[in-house]
Image (tube, rainbow, N blue to C red; front, top):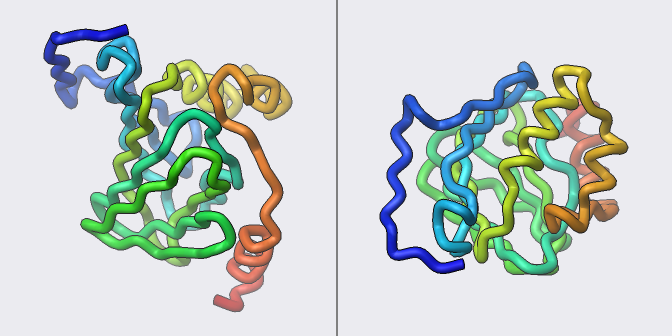
Length: 167
């Protein structure tokens, strides 16, 4: 799909998903709006939330730009803490996970390129938090949304340390 049309998303017209009391996802652009070029959302993760578990995308890269706060990211087997103004790109087939850094909120922009329809994935997550869908249903969509969950001992040990107050 290609398009030469300009797409403008006004803040007051963007769809906001906020059923999870620990996060807010604002849907900005999906491939239908960008000729397949990208998918974009703004995410606010409040301190203490688990964030996104380790996963990878086989066909897309993912860019993170921190608008405010601090975001901890796993990329492969390395942990990175991003602060306001920092940008990180995760190439396809690279395991990654993210959560707000210990004691902080994280407000960030996510851009996935090339675009893969993801708005319905985020809506499904919102349904889980409303009790209208299950995590098993989310797991069954891995191929559809190119969001493949993986194990990461590094991320698991990081989360354990945070929960025990060691960090």
